[in-house]
Length: 375
Image 1 (spheres, rainbow, N blue to C red):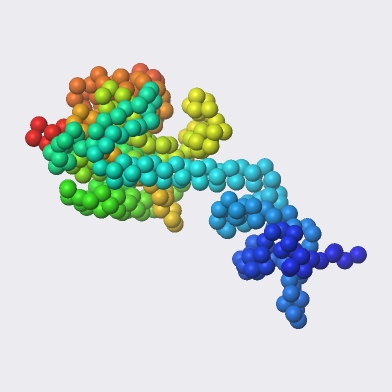
Image 2 (cartoon, one colour; image 1 turned 90 degrees about the horizontal axis):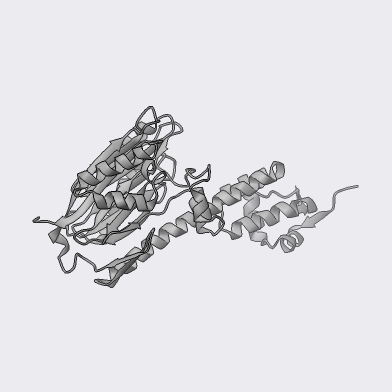
């Protein structure tokens, strides 16, 4: 007995997909009809195709790109649990990217409001202060920096890299068989991109930092199965402009309170953001280091999380890889930063802290103090 056929109109009504969309999905090989009349060109579908078509419609409704829709649908035919994992991973990326854009929006609002109180979510409370160093012009401020790399007590090689100049700060955590080369290439590429001289417009600095990230991503092309995280900052003379990918971090310590300025681009953090995982459980997850974003030299460079942060004298910034942040609670990091008199002292204290906690991973850190330029 022949299989009953649905016309394209009947199939469109059953699946909530328009006839135009069905023709498009046929052209892409995503949802070909069961039969096409050789004389009229009419498309006919079977009842068995309705479920796949509905899955396509639902995946498109959550914004999944067509290439990924095809992979999920094919996977669903043989491994429904695998298809579910693929959808969850896609949505985790969406949550991560939304959080990154939210962070940039908040920092730009603070920037455009002009001198005003600033509030930050912190590990132990809220820190607030006035913009541009309590009345000092941005050009009256400078950074005093220190950098440290430590192999740790377990790893056989160093795959982290760092840079601390008067205007550019960066840490990178390489992974894969050529992780060391990836981290070093990224940091080297950053240093070769010219930065706007202060006083520069914030938009120019953001553009320069995005250009630097693209150059850094290109620098790791061809390193098989390898890549790196990146947290970098450009100093404008009164503001710190951040670009971030992965699970390295940037912190600010102001008035004794530690503020985390970046959000981890990991599956676990995305689950926390979505309310599916308690933050207290995140540190114990075996997949806590699975990255949603990194520099790997792929066809499409990832979009970095961007932020603009007003500075004032006495601020102390920290950029670090997860060799520190994954083992040391925020309060212990805060104490080490507070105990160090100079950036060098603080950097040494942070290395000692990571080693006291077992030093299970490589560590890179940059400590930068905001000081009067003539001080």
